[in-house]
Image (cartoon, rainbow, N blue to C red; front, side, top):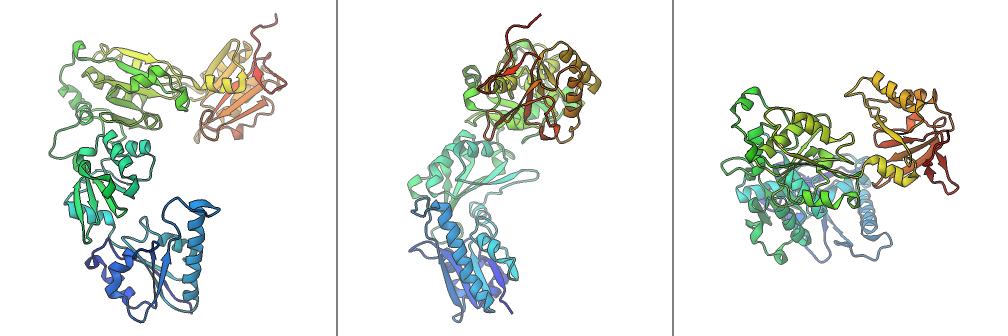
Length: 525
């Protein structure tokens, strides 16, 4: 008979917060294991010390390194991987000998705990039981007497090791947050809180439920005093409850749009209750093309505009590309609610708010510009001035990577039939093919649209030779981008997805000896 493996959470620090089940298992264990840093006491063992029986064998699993500095050939990751393998082997030897092993874990075993790495290596070989523990953030919230979230508030747990811009974005986009893993990361976390406009409502808690516990506003913390065993709470009350509203909440209240990443239409009663809007109060609404992806392809004009607005409205992934900063409220939504978010942006601008609607590529090429002008046909919103700032389009990016395939006359067609019937798409494809124009194809496929690209290829082959050059750009400008040059006859529709943009050459389009694709400026009579 092999022994049983127990991952036991001992809570955040106060021994009285150990659960009854955890206490029973520790007191009856044959082997008690725990992780510890070099030359340091194990915090998990300190918490459970009074429960460990004198008869138990203790296994201290000492980390070889606790920072990124190591001479291990595999670096920090390699050093820890070897350590976890060796630690698992030590525990496995006890289990194979029939001894029950309790691995102590501070807080909860499955919440940022080292237990998980032992579980990955041992759970399939030995009978395993996990005992949950009180996590540190629950003790910190009790210490601060700060309710983390209420009703429909979203709580997000974030590691302070995230890149600063990403941390700021996530802090701005959630109602309540817990930021773990501080220590050396504290200065960057503090800057991220400030950029997200959440610093004034952030509480720092150190050694929650332990001796030496303290709490104070993050703005008052000396970074040099911050230990690893500390965290930051940003409560839902910083957005809701009995306090003054932020400009973003005022906007949502006025427009009736849902908070935190959604946009919804207002009921008629809300529209009727909206105060009269005058042309004098309206601010100019900016519609901004962000380019296909890299920051280097964002124009200086667009960058300057985004640095001055108070609201950014758009499809979630595009809103995510705008750096968070103090005073900026983000309104992210899904991919099929263009008119709703256009109306939200117009209503915000109508009340004098500085607003930018963002779009990938160029906002005027299958982007948000047309949706904004369509929504602006509403008599209540016609007075809002709208300015479109151009961006690098996806077809420009793919063409530049390939060479100059659209150097002559060319057309652009989207294969999406969400806003137009498919028979219209087919007629346009035939017209372009008959006119012998180079063709850029947007939205060639998606999870729910897998046949259109095959049909489009068939239609084009009715008028074009199989040798016609085709360029397939996937994720151009982003990590992992690819560019494939093939022919219309050899194009495999199964390899095309939504991240692709195709350029189908004209009859004169050619591939040079260096592999560059170009279309001559002249056309033979």
